[in-house]
Image (cartoon, rainbow, N blue to C red; front, side, top):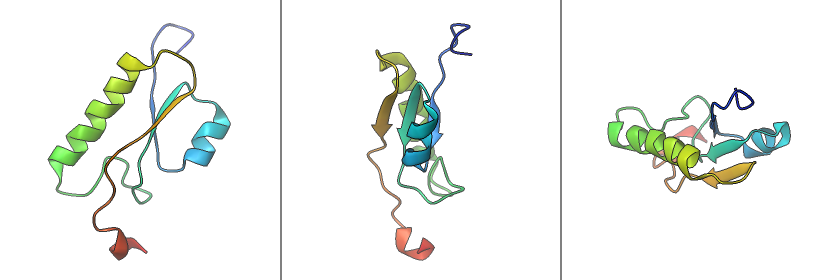
Length: 80
C-alpha cells in the first residue's frame, strides 16, 4: 500500500515485534492484548486513539516513525 502512495499506520501492543517487522508508522499503547483501542465503554479514549493514529499519518516525515500513546490502562491491575 505504501508503494502505491497510500500511507499506513499500525496500532501496536508489542512494540518489539512491530519495530522488528519494519512498519512505516506505528503507535504503541500500554494496553492489554486484545484491547488496542483502549478500555471498554470509554468512547472518548477510543476516539483519542483513532485521532492519534490519523495524526501520525499526517505528521510522520520519515520512515519507521514510532510514537507512544500518552494514556495508560487505568484498570491494569485487574489484568495482571
